[in-house]
Image (cartoon, rainbow, N blue to C red):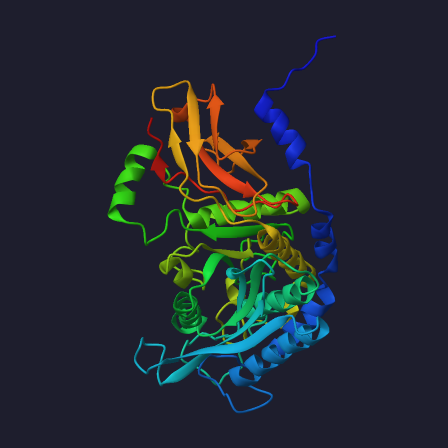
Length: 443
């Protein structure tokens, strides 16, 4: 009988990708759809969470909502012995900043930090939006329950905090509710500036905006599909970096795209029943989300959301019209689906929380050679490294070899036909984001 002989890189792919951390399966199982339903119902019950709505009432408006969120974070912290640092982060946005800011308003974010044990200054963030709106973006008094947009994302953040607060991570994990999204992404801008001013080293932000709808306006119904939006390269790249890309490639290999691939990979490894769709775009056509201010500041950031939207339930006055009930109502949210996407976030946060930092100064050589040579700086805490490569048209890193040194030559791999990257591996197998080469390795 003929024996099948597999290439060495494929053997590595099969054997090493089959290794898994059982803690991540525990995290998936711990996510509760019932708790998420309860949180979404509470948030929708504040009537409106418009950024300019009531801040004095205990039962209605964005003030009541953010105080409740802060109390929930504090309860979670009490349950884990004070493991979360909970605080408000706020910025004053003056009247006229844009046509949706019709008076001065404090945009207040709620932040909870699970401090890392080894690298407390390195952060991975999960965010959801606190605020909601109806058809008129300046209408801050009408009922705007915002059950899916975005109580679902905010509830996911709270639930991820409950589950992950039971663990310790090498890096810090941040859970945050951002305000002012519907008025111009002001909450994200404020927290990104806060991070810069406090010298946060941000691994990436997973922004969750609408994670609860499974019935699309186009008639498609699916509780498995979800989208990961990511921009191709950072807007902060230099002219020199842009010119280099023309010769060396990397048009789809910016830091946010690597974060998207990471979430895709952890999902396919631990939740293979889900269908993560990597969308090669910053956000939906002509629209925006709270990851964008972080991208603008040079940080990796992605948007995680449902695949099939229903526009009769977004930014709508509550009304019955032509037999259609418009409005972002609780009855339209699929809580089991929201729990699945919360788990998608939680396992990615955990894996990055346990991982070493990405390699720096990755250089590549091999022009007109039958091999590709890579070299990078050592990463503290890394026990090994993975060199990844893929076809230039592939969306995912499909092949790799694991090495123990900080340089390696891939014999027989022609540099012209593939893209390459390097990830650091920690002692428990968790990997950093893949670092795309940033320089040429000279002889």
